[in-house]
Amino acid sequence: MARIGIIGAGIAGLTAAYQLQQQGHMVRVWEARGVAGGAIRSERTSDGFLVEHGPNSLRATTPIVPRLLEDLGLERARLSAAPAATKRFIVRDGTLRPLPLSPPALLTTSLLSTRAKLRLLREPFVAAGAPTADETVASFVRRRLGPEVLAYAVDPFVAGIFAGDPHRLSLKHAFGRLYEMERTHGSLLRAALHSARTGATDDASTATDRRIFSLRDGLQMLPHALADALGEAIRYEAPVTALRQMPDGTWTVATETDATQVNALISTVPLHALGSIDWAPAVDTSPLQRVPYPPVRVVALGFRRADVAHPLDGFGMLVPSAEDQFQILGTLVSSTLFPGRAPAGHVLLTTFVGGMRHPTLGAASDAAVRKVVLNDLQALLGVQGAPVFERFIAWPRAIPQYTLNHGAAVRTLEQLEDVHPGLFFAGNYRDGISVGDAMASGEDAARRVDAHLAGADRAVAATGP
Ligand SMILES: Cc1cc2nc3c(=O)[nH]c(=O)nc-3n(C[C@H](O)[C@H](O)[C@H](O)COP(=O)(O)OP(=O)(O)OC[C@H]3O[C@@H](n4cnc5c(N)ncnc54)[C@H](O)[C@@H]3O)c2cc1C
Image (cartoon, rainbow, N blue to C red):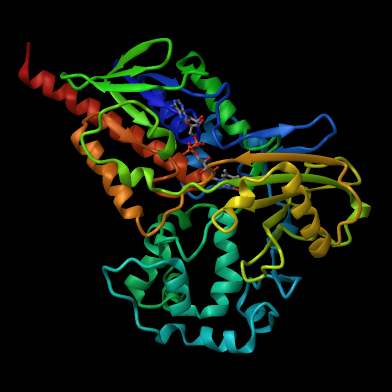
């Protein structure tokens, strides 16, 4: 049996470790904190609120998600989003407008002007960009769909997913599917019609269930179940401080208290944390350190239902940067989204602040953030009076941004894996930032480690004793 080291017990590291353990490998996971899950943290408070500190919902966009839920016996705990949650609001001119979700709704929506709707009809006739060029999400959307769709649909959507700025994100790396649609069909509309006609998808993930869901006691049930299955294999409060590759290809993994030798290693720590580990990479890793991770504040506020004027009949609202009289990025109506998130007669609103749009606010004090959030919630949702419950969560370095330089970061990871056989990288900085993407990345790394070790065994057998 080979001993495989995994640094980080976020969802990518846990998925990789679980897969390898299931295949009979001996694994050891080092986690800096006292608990598994990384960005996935749920908290049931004594006054009956269930707060998600990180991700609020998950999609089964890759087959590993339903497979692990089934394996771990979590299917019974799965909570589908309430039907009302299909409705999403975007702020325009200071009021909430429903996001149009069908072609007829697009014709009648007040979110876009008539001019913007006519501009959309020109999309199939817009020439495709140069095949090799990467461009920002903003440039692509303005070119294909016009400036209003950028300002009132894509900009808030990018803030909601990445806490990002469409003028900084790379289309190819952050929204690869849109990039491929233009490459293959010359137009997004033609690509969509092709999929509808043939049932073909440009993206393997669309074959799986794209509806959002959570778990009864919050998403943390998933990493906790993985951590239970891994048991003693995880070392908590054990930040890895140094790595050395030995002449025979094995690795020594050091913490402050001990050193362990492993035959293969998967790093799943955020790229900024990798920079604090003492090791001797054989290639320049500066592109990894240049990946921005902006700060985000999550503000969970509980109100008496009677103190919020809005019907709260939807998923939540997103605030475009063009609506600069507001400072929040958006708010989820957590208590509408999933049952059991607030006590009877109360609602739970989860608001996101900061990101690439307002990094200073992302790092501001609780009092400053509270003021901003309450002001915006009063104006947008008709919130009155003080919240009955408050929780302020800080993510100083929240989500990696796939900017135009991201290609250099991905190439650096590939070069490191080439020049250091037995070293692999997985995590949300690689092939997507969602929980499902991070799980798929962990699964992929596990597959590659298994193949590497099988290859090493064959080489030993071929040379013989
Ligand atoms: C506020 C917020 C909201 C989000 N909302 C959603 C959402 O609704 N839906 C969705 O799909 N995704 C969402 N995401 C994204 C998603 O949660 C993350 O991308 C994903 O969970 C990251 O998993 P990971 O394993 O790659 O990294 P992480 O979760 O960051 O795990 C890395 C682990 O490495 C550990 N570590 C760091 N340094 C060391 C060291 N030296 N030694 C040992 N361990 C170390 C860390 O403690 C951590 O546990 C959100 C993220 C945030 C922050």
